[in-house]
Length: 404
View: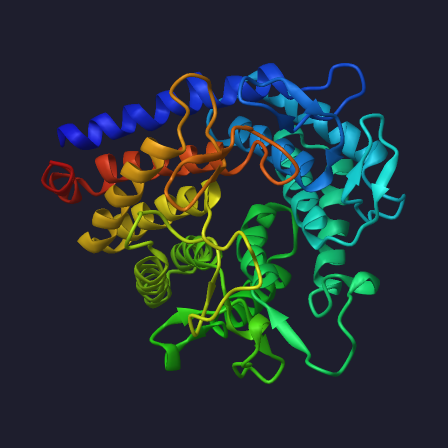
């Protein structure tokens, strides 16, 4: 066994189970009204009590997934049920149209405009149904998934601000999520239906990987599948692009399609090289395909989830293909993430850095950051490192070589 590989396995295990998960269990559970607090400061103190359904769903999923895949720990199951019952009672309008946000007590604040409230409700109740055997939870997951599929062509539904017909475009985010979502609820839906949903998701995702751009990924394309030369059409999100590639790798393994894994790996390498800040390190948040000014003022920030998802993608790329470039990228991003995002004084990781890598906001959770990317990333990386140690030992020596 490689000494460095063994060290990394321990590092990711300890960070997840002894630091990050206890942070959320100790600080996020609202014992009075149900659900979870996600607006937590550096020390874990609540600074706002509003509840955001996509983050509620992510936390339910997190503890359900751990219960299903790691250990039947009652504390995890209780935490998942605690959040799910709040979601079931207050998170939707009675027809499983999921609000974006509600008050601490559960009164609606923002209507169901955001499709990701639906996707993470599907993931949450799907995993919890597997954990509990509850038909009610399974029905919520299946019916919500149907609503997601019904909104694929217009994710924002009546809340879509774009004038119809002028510049119709397809967005990368939903097909990307569906690649992961389909496998999450696999035990709950008809196999033939699942197979078709997976194939549709793969095909749609592939449209955004552009051979004419050397394999770069754009966030929006025209309905005809062509590039559109406008700010939205040139918009690039390296983190999204790289994250989606580990979804495709998982599907490639599930479907025994090594060519899909290879393409996903190569695309991830291309996007990492393109998105890396050559001056200050880290991966840019947003970019413009032609290098023009972006419409997002936060374009040069370094975000936690971008780097966490890149860690997952690169270690899977190495484990599944043996391409040492992936391990080299894993080390580069590992060094950056552990140096800049990990808080050495308090548990959980910072989320928002400026371009130079300095902390912009010391919060550990908020409207967009919750109990998801950091613990999921630590879990995924730890699991893949163990897979390499146990199933691909021939890949282990490169850790000592590259991490020297």
